[in-house]
Image (cartoon, one colour):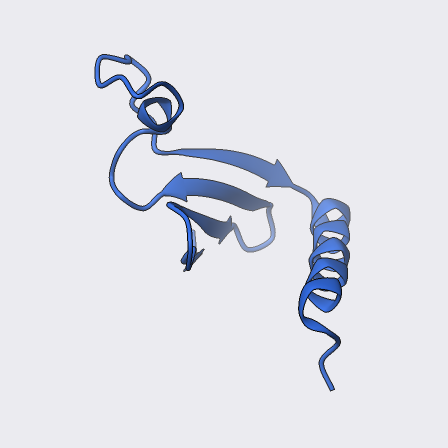
Length: 82
């Protein structure tokens, strides 16, 4: 399954996109410091949930909507591309 990571330039979470050709697309947020998300939420190392990310699975319609929303957010924040 191909996967791409978009590194967070300010915070501690990266965006990952993975896909199965002819199948589905997964979008996830993972910590890039190696600590579990439970640690970031609770500050406790004893948390049994040692997962490093949260993922959602999307169909073509959902991905198309996400692309439109991201473009609108980008244009609003940084201005339109020429």
